Image (tube, rainbow, N blue to C red; front, side, top):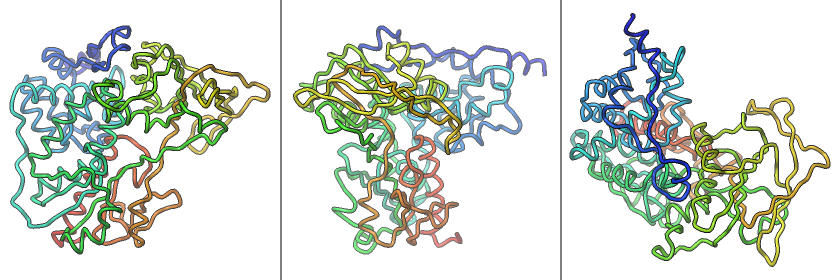
Length: 472
């Protein structure tokens, strides 16, 4: 008991980072990760609970205490194998998961001190395996002779594919873009998730026998009916995410220099616009950016814009206060340290321009009253409080909806009023159509990477039972 008490009081080991003045000028990863000694020291803080609540807080149910124990003993490759039993993308989730609201939120030692840095340790283990040995694939079961189509190579689709391949099924992923990964590739910046890390994780999935077909738009090239009736797939999983951007619906949104966060981040991350002319996808040279929104996507867009060579200033405009910002606290602190200028309790009412290009935005001051349906304080305009912000670019990061293409091509697929696919059986993520399953943002709306992966894993269990004619 005394030993556990000492562990409770031990400080959490911080992960080294690039200095703000250095990193704001490059796209290299901000967090540098643990050394082996740091990882062992941090892992030694775990008290190995008999009833580990951290596991229940993980949407993919990683055996957290087991892998942490291996790390504390220096068995890093054994730790990697434990994680891979549940999570096929640990180098990704270790970097981008909101652990503070999931596994770490339930960490017992966090009651009286700082919770264990589970995410940092997961990242360390994945990176160590990749750089110190050949990454070994988890053993797959013998072929079942069953074929499963996965629509969308984002987090939900990749998680479902990985689990189905391990169960012995033939898996083919159909991806509309020219690179697999979904939001992991086009949405999350290089300085948070290096693309070489994602490529390595995708290579691991391919070595499980998964085939990935890119530039393949289901709903145009093939329909769900054709996948089943002509191509012989026994089941389908739809994980196409939510990539249709929302806008403000205010005057001036059609001016040059106005971007959705989706377009802006896709140009930068997927098409390397920041490396023009090496990559032939230019982006206009702006000096000042105003980013509208307060979520992780807004922070990603703001911090990305800051790193472009001609940028002099980046402002983030949010209609609530800092306390209500939905973005991860770590990302908020990084943005503040890098020099992002935050304008709280402000909401744009108009975008003005000159010669067809953005010149300023008109904002209105807001005040918080009561609470809205989300449980957060409700923003209300303050009369007569408009003010201008000079800028030559505006990035709108207000969330996104679903692309209706697949649903429109399958009339028997039920959707709600927002276009999200409705589930006939949420326990296995089965849709209204037999043999067709769905999960992730296409069902729930925009959420986290790890929650989408959890949905993909749940669907994989249902798909396995369905194609094997087990009771479901």
